[in-house]
Length: 477
Ligand SMILES: *[C@@H]1O[C@H](CO)[C@@H](O)[C@H](O)[C@H]1NC(C)=O
Ligand SMILES: *[C@@H]1O[C@H](CO)[C@@H](O)[C@H](O)[C@H]1NC(C)=O
Ligand SMILES: *[C@@H]1O[C@H](CO)[C@@H](O)[C@H](O)[C@H]1NC(C)=O
Ligand SMILES: *[C@@H]1O[C@H](CO)[C@@H](O)[C@H](O)[C@H]1NC(C)=O
Ligand SMILES: *[C@@H]1O[C@H](CO)[C@@H](O)[C@H](O)[C@H]1NC(C)=O
Ligand SMILES: *[C@@H]1O[C@H](CO)[C@@H](O)[C@H](O)[C@H]1NC(C)=O
Image (cartoon, rainbow, N blue to C red; front, side):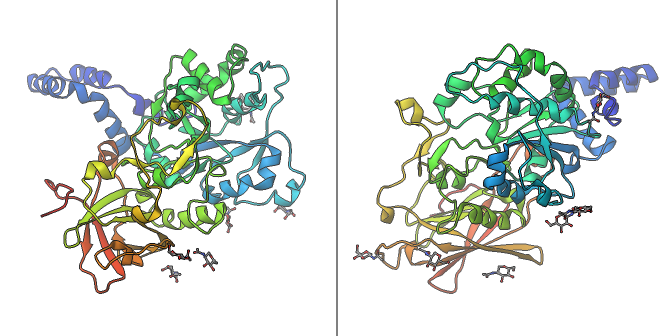
């Protein structure tokens, strides 16, 4: 608490506020007011207090309040993983370290490279036992990033955020997501695996490390104090994240799940997962070396750089899915903003358009359970000509308050007639920059879109907008 001068007013609890009210005045009307407050808002007290903090007593959470602890090792950092971190690291406004086992041989040449986080060398872990057969003892070194980062005594920290060297964060969306929570309380925020079997084995209550996760500063400080003594009870566990979640469990703290973090325990083509993102800001992507490049005909790194062109223009809209219907041709069009547009030459009801297409292959081979996910999937047709036409992000530009993103048709060799969306070469999507306020973050609503009257046969234009109060997303007769 010492380090957070704004905390006392932030964590002031509502019942104390009410006491103050009663003591400071015996006027009957005030008493009535208080009763009114209690009767009508008792279930919302926490909500009100968290809103008033942000609005009145302290500036809202920003990147400056976050300290990152990134787990890597000398070999993979030097080889290529640092390029993934360079994608999202902002030298001006971020603090933290990448934790390595030893200094890279060429470190002196990169010491001034401010487009990467500084290097911290992990402490010695020889004294800890590791008994998981076939596992990697480095799990202990990586787990201790949570205590070693706290020991650096950064000031004015609200959240510690952890990730691997192949975790790609979307920093603005991370900030938005964390700003929903009171950093003065104890929070452990992240996500599980997408795969049922992974969670059955490693736990549904664990934040998977590669997806990235956040621990509020007061919790991280307490965890850091007790961590080494707790670690000794878990030599038999596999990963660093299992150790961290076990020690948080010993402190009595469970996981708060945020679906914008992505562990991505899949192989192959990630398309389906990216194209059906939940209505929440995209916080992270992981395992990018285990999947195909996310855009065709690009390297993994180029493809991510391409994705960031969109993220740099409208971070909060990244992958947000809007579905619109062309009633003239009876087409169903799905925009996964900043990534891809899909056009179906038929009518698909909205609930059938939302599940994830199973374009990817299983993380692990095995029983039925290893192919069971925590979300509904829909079939990805074996014949590419019976799949929707896909348009991938080509370019994004903004001006005059409007953002234009263009999507080019992916190569295919299918025959079609003029009533088919396959005749289109390009889709242009117009939108406005999203900036969610607290209410929209807490109660998100999918946006609507319209197919605009088009000038030619080869281009479709779409406008994304807020839905009207009673608007339903469906094909109009
Ligand atoms: C790094 O920066 C320091 C201080 O600005 C400078 O003295 C040093 O020569 C630089 N090293 C390299 C390799 O550029
Ligand atoms: C941050 O990095 C950019 C290029 O990546 C560089 O132009 C800028 O000077 C750096 N800023 C600081 C404070 O190091
Ligand atoms: C952080 O603070 C502790 C306690 O005051 C001190 O022992 C330690 O040396 C400090 N660490 C750094 C890196 O300044
Ligand atoms: C892939 O990219 C190269 C160079 O940019 C281009 O010549 C080629 O046509 C592309 N291939 C496909 C299938 O788009
Ligand atoms: C992409 O958009 C930018 C910004 O408007 C523009 O400068 C650039 O020429 C565009 N690139 C292509 C290939 O259209
Ligand atoms: C496209 O498909 C036709 C018919 O299936 C085939 O004959 C032709 O070789 C294909 N062209 C390419 C470039 O794959």
